[in-house]
Length: 115
Length: 114
Image 1: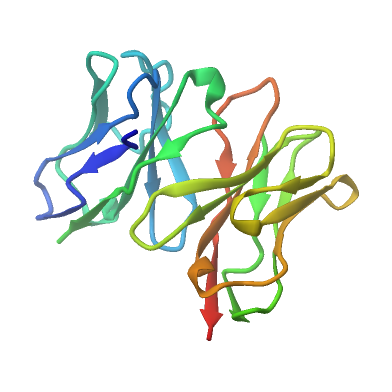
Image 2: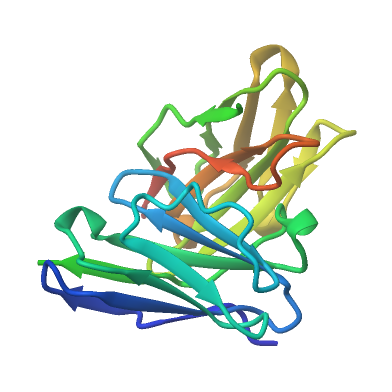
């Protein structure tokens, strides 16, 4: 079956612009996760959804970051007024449920470059 | 809170040679432990995981890892490396009974020479 898909695969934007990153999880997976991978760094956990609900948003780096999930499926990560330090690969993952978070399936990521 | 350290940023091996990637964790009890691989332009793929029981864990693609409580380590090994193993490898640790989100190390980049 289809895996986790993310779009766009690459995004170049000017500083100060808003961007939207999309994640389409594996069908039937109720839990969805967003991570940020900066050059030379590990994965930084941003936020997770169980269904359409995000119980803990404390991992979001600033209030310029927001995420939503509708219909228990597709999720969008929005970064407003992008800064150069936002440049990174944004990874999305999904799992059958929150309690199965150790069995996450990752998408290929969106590489964001802020110029 | 748990943490994980991968001491080696880069590892270079020749094709056919054996491989060991190091991972050390910090956690007050026996954690959950994982290794993921990320090929260029790809997402992360779970290679293997340890929850409990046998401390030698077999994974996909011929990889294995051994949990050593006394050393707080979970090193990844492969007896003979193939050129296609060149990738970024991430060790991760999870806290049983805590947050289900694993904490990832910074990764080790594996370079394979022909």
